[in-house]
Length: 304
Image 1: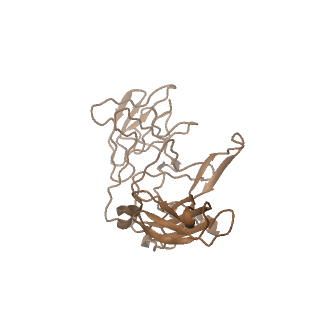
Image 2: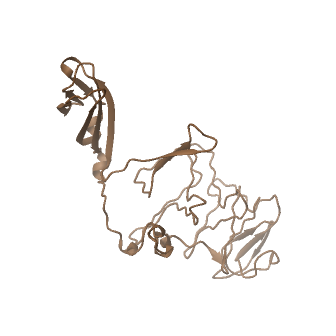
Image 3: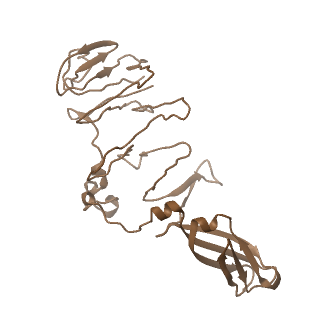
């Protein structure tokens, strides 16, 4: 197991030979022994394990296992330098439970915060977040690019295949299909029952297949159907309808393609590097600073 340290404050003398001299603690547990000293600047507790394998902290409770709280810095800091390990591990085996939960309760702030924050300092080599399984969001997902990513269907061992998502300045839904014209060169296209409850502002696209035909929409969408006319009996027509999403959530949260930056983001950029500008002008500067002690990043690993 990896060692676990929560550290800041005055060193009380226990395990001093194994810990940096610039780091101190109000209470220190080393390999099961407890030492306590008083300091207004020290952390409440530091835990250190030198045995491998070993566990720095093991908690069992009918209530909270570990609670961390601070009025001046991070409540709990956790990190590890071991390969393929995690700084903080959350696991829940109970029904309907959550392994890791974050909540942002800040109000009336000049800068927005995050309930859970992931930051890939080198985004060419790592992810800020990685999920195995489905991801659900009740609100808005913002991104510089969105696409699907799969094994290449022809060379799955050597290549991947990606497709970009279709984007628009409106929330557009797209429906399409192929219909065969019947008697008199007409056909009725039936849409799903729920179609009108989630869509408005319809746009039509028709393409005759095989030969030219002056096809047109002879009857617009009403009661979940529209009519195509102008072709020959038996001719196939490719049709497409685009519509603006208009369900209750979309109406309550109108899409705005252009928005002013908030005051604290004026003069900063989402992608400064791509504009040939310094990374210091990016929105990253509003992220929390990684905890450090004596100029070094704090080591604080929590392992299961």
